[in-house]
Amino acid sequence: MTFYTSLSGLQAAQTDMSVISHNLANVSTSGFKKSRSEFADVIASNLASDPLKIVGSGTVVKGNVQQFTEGNLTTTGSALDLTISGDGFFAVKTDGATAATDYTRNGSFLVDTNRNVVDAQGSMLQVYPVDSEGNPTATGTDGLMNLTLPQTSGTPKASTAVSLDVNLSSNSTVPTTTTFDRTDPTSFNNSTATTVYDANGNAETMTSYYVRQPSTGTDGSSTWQVHSYLDSQPLTVGGSADPVTLTFNAQGGLTAPTTATTYDAIQPTGATTTQALSLDFAGSTQVASAFSVASRSQDGKAAGQLSGVSVDNTGVVTASFSNGDSKKLGMVAIANFNNPTGLRQIGDSYWSATGTSGSAKLGTAGEAGFGSLMSGTLEGSNVDITEELVDLIAAQRNFQANAKALDTQSQITQTIFDIRS
Image (cartoon, rainbow, N blue to C red; front, top):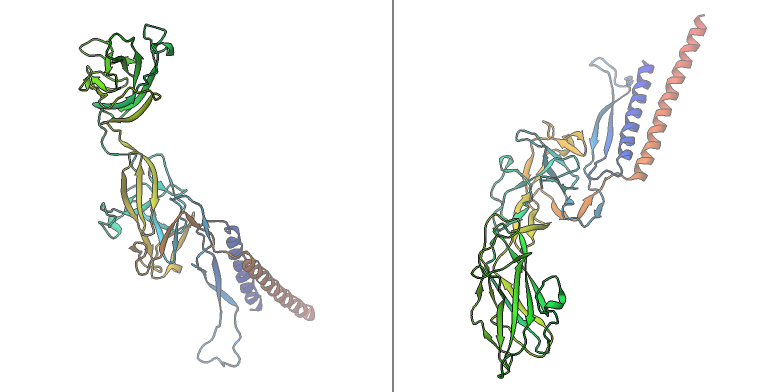
């Protein structure tokens, strides 16, 4: 019987060392929770047994209990690195509507090729839908959805009206090259480039070239010709590519044209429809100062491209776009359990619910029973190397002691065999 008693001690010590070794192996695993082996003595007795003469039968492992103390926090600066400070787990789901929901403390998330927010294993972060104010519009397990970042925001609009207020220096001289050629800088004095948009929101460049003309009048007035192009295509009026003529009086004020010039409809490069542009120089001047652009505007716009994402302390995820739009995408769901130590470890820093843990209770950051959420930080492992090494030494000594007891019993048995022989 003593052999089995010592054997149970050896097995218990070996289990303890295995658990400690597993803890040490995951000292750098984000969101990892260490375990602790718990043991109980084994006593075989009945009503007729004398309580003063009962001898134990060894030990048994009652369980490897997970320790859900919080790990050290590391600042990363990434908005999608999330930490739950306090109780709770992130809910994640693998692809597929019928996939089971798993739970993790590892808040290291990134964006995949389909713009889903996923963890390193590709499981998608679960959130609740929200309204424009960031208030959740659904609750419970059925209300969860994948967090997906939109690529664009807003509806593109083709440019139709361009306004340029420029100052054309009165000290400018007439170009030496008399025939205008936009590839020859000696054939024009100045140029401006204005970004406009086609019907699909694609950016195009409208370039205007300014050419001073020789003075012909005696009233001090002067004229400039403006050649305009959309990318490489000349803008025309009534089918003619003749330039627009700007006339200034002796004081530098614009006297003609008095209205915007409307060009013929043109199909931008890569576009599928045509668009008509108008160009207005109403605020332009001709004074002695250097050429400058006082103001420039156009009425088109592109769809906003995703430029950033943020997560506030309530878990609301907000996307920002290049056109200045912002959109609230969802609120991070947090799960908690009546008995977290009863969760089943399934690897990859995942847990699944069991009958021992109870079903998940879902909520959001800051609610009673749920932790708070921090963005830009990661929770590390809660393994303390020094503590684990001390425990490992103790487990090793326990193993050695039980091995010595087993060896002693073997020697006693051998002695008895020797007596009989």
